[in-house]
Every structure is written in C-alpha cells, then in structure tokens.
Length: 268
Ligand SMILES: [Zn+2]
Image (cartoon, rainbow, N blue to C red; front, side):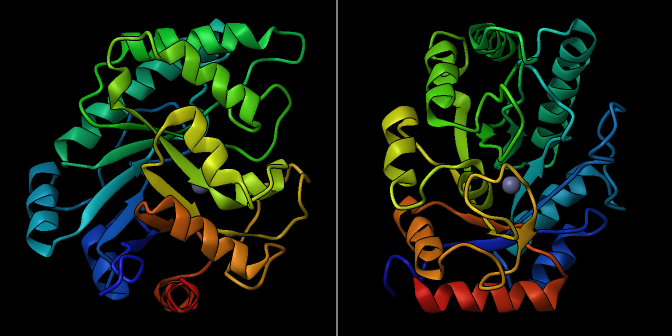
C-alpha cells in the first residue's frame, strides 16, 4: 500500500451515533459537534451510552473521534462579553473531548473588531492557551472570511503562532487546514501546505472541501468534490502534501461522502 492510499479519510457527521456514521462510510475517523454549534450552552453528548461507552465503542471499532467546537467561540476578541464565555466554552469542550478520547478539538481562529490592532488578538490567543488545560490537542483552523480575522491570511496565522509559542501547553496546539477556507480566503492552494508548515511546523488535520465560491471571495460555502470552484488536481495535491488525516465537511450523507472519498482517492 502506498503512503497516500493509507491516508485516513472520514467526514463530519451527525452527533447522535458517530460510530454508526463511521460504519456507514467505512471511515476510520469522524468529526462531530457536541451540542448546538451556535450556542454558548456547554457541550452535550448525544451518544446514548455516555462518554465512557463512546470512547470504548470508538476504540473497539478502530474509529478516531474529532470534535468541532462551536462556531461562536472567539478567544481572540477584545470584547469581554464574548471572550470570557468563549474561553469557558473552550475548556468545557476540551474536557468533554478528553472524556470521549477524542484525538483533537477543532476551533476557528476568531477575529478582532475592525478598529482593533490584530496584535491584541494574538495576545488574547496566547492568554487563552495559557489559561486552558489542553487535555486533548487543540487544532486551530483557518477561516474563509471576516475582517480582521486571526487565521484567514498567512501573516495573521504567523502572528497567532508567534504569540502562543510562549504559552504553557503550546505543544498541544496544532493546525487544521481547511481547503475551502484557504481558497475562498484568498490563499493560493499551490503553496498553502508549504506556507502553513513554514509557520506552524505541523498540519494535524485537513478539512477537505470544495468551494462554491471564487478565490478570495471570503465566502464559506462547502461543495462536494468536483462540484465547486477548486481545481481537482490542486485539491488532491493539498491532501497528498499535507499527509494528515482528512475530514470531508461536504454536503450530504453517507452516500455523498462515499462518492467524495472515492473521488479523492482516485486522484491521490
Ligand atoms: Zn472546516
């Protein structure tokens, strides 16, 4: 088996029974939310047997679990009324992810407001990493849009990484590269893997998604492979070069995901 055919490919799935979802896709990994991704309420595990049972069932099935944190977590912001609940929610999700034996918690980079100095956001990231007990790896994801975003463009990602380097627990912080977000965010996919690695030294997970929108559009709308605006060969090259486990966050259910996996494997 070649190295690329051994690449582990899975999908973002419904949280009720991630093991069944993995089985339906013959996938060695799945990603899911713990509760409502648009809510400040703490994590909720939908799995019937509870956290210890999910952990055991995942191990028995050989399925790696990844948790996606709520979208509204923004630890970078200068707004206390967002930053403080964001940090709390982040720790709660780290704890819940650890209980189920997750391989990582994925969180978006967040943003500061238009008239803020981005340096404040970088420092808030440092403080968040310092203040959080990272019982599982925290994988910071690049985002597609937003003004003054922390992880849309490379210079900002570098700012975040420089800042968190001095935080306690920095070795537990990794990177999740989303191909749709990179493309729509205005970062050439031809060089994105090298560009990111120069900054972070690691890519722990790839969110492989085609994009319904044009390069640098700032829009975040995922598409099934071949149905969007990303060059098929480039999409495959990013996955190949990153060499990290892959989560497809593409539309549809098991059938569409199996088609996406096959499409991708053909081109690796
Ligand atoms: Zn993503």
